[in-house]
Image (cartoon, rainbow, N blue to C red):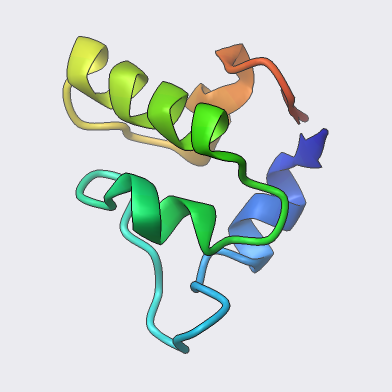
Amino acid sequence: MINLVTFMILGASAQSADPLLLNSASTDQLTNVTGISTEMADAVIALRDERGRLGSVEELRVIPGISA
């Protein structure tokens, strides 16, 4: 399980110092974050598609495996 604080801190990909933009990141970009599986990345993208632009990392709490 990945903690939201960890997600925010590790928001830059493991291969880059650039910040990860949740509203445009691909599955490949999201899975470069330590602890984010392909399934979690796909869930982030599905949530983004469902809700439109994400306004906060805290919106990710509804995804199984991501905790507060």
